[in-house]
Amino acid sequence: MNTVIASLILVFVAIAFAATVISGLLKLVFFFKQKDTYRHILKFGLLGEMAGLIIMFAVWLLYRNEINNWGEPESIIAIPFYSMLLGQLIGTVVTYRNNRRLKT
Image (cartoon, rainbow, N blue to C red):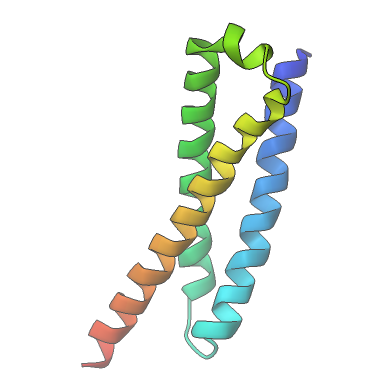
């Protein structure tokens, strides 16, 4: 197994675990007694992570030589993490708006 593939799998699993924990915390804080909000927020977080992994892989393919010469080439891992956080934020906003619309 190639080390790049193994690294991508480990990054995906670590960020997915973070997405699960953050989704649980968001549900406990904002949507305590509402149904299906955890799944909805987690879905957006994981979609954001997948988009971030695709972007990270594309950037790495385009700028591979420059990234490998960095002092810390691991810093490119921040791309899927921040896109996961953006997905969590979008999921929270969409869930809040849907629940607000259902109440009226």
